[in-house]
Image (cartoon, rainbow, N blue to C red; front, top):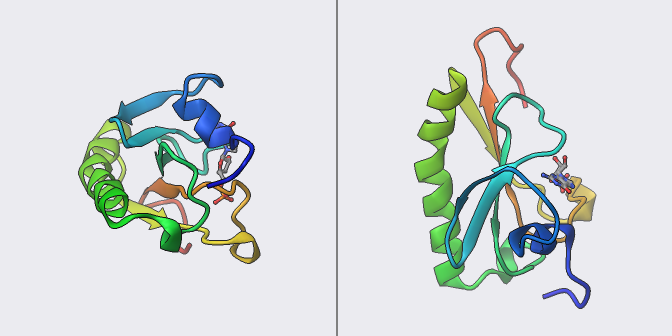
Length: 115
Ligand code: 5GP
C-alpha cells in the first residue's frame, strides 16, 4: 500500500466527492471524472494496492465479481451495445493513479470500435 492516500483512497473514504454507483466494505465503483463514454466507471479496491499482482486473492475475486455484475447494469443504464473493460497496470502502461482500478467503458455501434 502507498504511504500517502491516493486520490482513489480519498474517494473511497468520502473525502473527495465522486458519483459512487456501488460500494461494499472492500470495493467501490464510481463514475470517471473524464469519461471516454457516458457511464465510464472505475471499480477499485478500497485499499490502495498499486498493481493487480499486489491484490490479495479475496480482494481480486470480489473486484472481478463486481466488474462482472456491474457491466450489464451499466450497459442497460446508458443503452450501450458493448463494453470495453481494461486495466492500465503500471505507469508504462498509462496508469496515472497508483491504485488498482478497472475501467468499464460503454461502447456503441457507431463509436468507431477499437480500443
Ligand atoms: P488510468 O490512466 O490511471 O488507467 O486512469 C485513471 C482514470 O482516473 C482516468 O480515466 C481519470 O479520468 C480518472 N480520474 C483521475 N482523477 C479522478 C478523480 O479525482 N475522480 C474521478 N472520478 N476520476 C478520476
